Image (cartoon, rainbow, N blue to C red; front, top):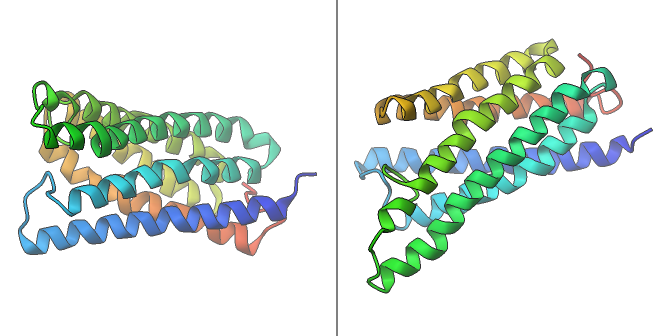
Length: 215
């Protein structure tokens, strides 16, 4: 039998860290809104967002590993597929943010801006921004939708299902070239939705560590 204590421990710290990062991100966005600051963000918000999103992408992997191992054996095919899509989302996110923190920042400081628009972390045309939207609009959506059947009881599956559907709106916004649609779904699809779903999973893990993911 798997070590449930390790699964609960990893799930707790990774889930808590993931939710905390989302809260900080949304709080920073709220501050920008109140101050009437432009988007894409300027410094110091830009670097703050890059670091937060890169850490969120990294911490999602151990979180989803714990979720997968906590699921009942009969449901683990869903959680394994979900974990695979989360890894793809994390790769897309970290690639965009790492490029922004290194090449984009260094090129701007060296007055070497030719072609730099293709690698901007926000906005179009940008290859890396499109890559991150593939991560959150497609891969993260599929991760949530595949996770839903494994946690349907207690409303957890509903939270992941709604988050997954809303995340598809981000990809649709990119297809339609509608930043308004992407901006409309972002707070729920990539902020409040996953935060609520993960908190519900953490509650299940803490209350029922022996059979945390019973469907």
